[in-house]
Length: 298
Image 1 (cartoon, one colour):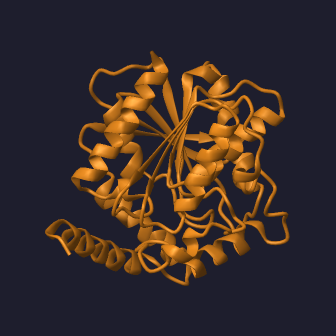
Image 2 (spheres, one colour):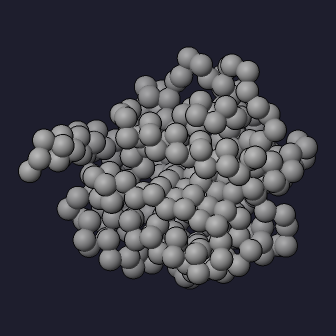
């Protein structure tokens, strides 16, 4: 094993240890632990946070305090398996997005399962989209981004807009998106011993909470099964060591087959939503996201 591989293995052990502290069978304790991580890692001195309520949905604007563009914005959907996660936890990513793009980011707390199963999160996502429209933004002024289940929500929201024959966002940015709730990807087996963040019991629990009794091949639940004809450009990032690797790879193949402008970057040695971690490869990945968004906004 090379020095680089040893370092990466040590890093994954550290990530596994941190994640084991967060995970808890008590959902409320799990959620609270995530918020504490957000407080520790997501508070950037060069970022301002402005709370907003959209109906009953808590949201916030994440803005660089320096001079920046207001021509385009990012709508961010947080991850957490649809039963954990929050805009506070998402600050580990939304603050970086704002810093790397010089754009305002709008993040929101959609309702969580099991208290609020599907389609509550999607309904809230569309309500936030409508709110942004009422604020005077055009659909082409908005890039939708999300990680894990938030990547699922970003895709489902866009598919819902297509279904309703509404105008679509300028593009999507997806970090380790969860695209297939049937859990059929081979990487669930081949990466099971590598991924320090996700495992099958956690995902089974998330599916049961969010979509029990539903058709898991419904594209608004598992976007991988959707029709992507006419879909906006998509940029996907994932780790080669994550169990959801195939969720990204199969989505990329389907998007390409549908004629969608799409890019997939697979990061060797990386895990699920590695962009949250404070190290160089995560920073490099965020810079690539910034470059993709800039290419859309020209």
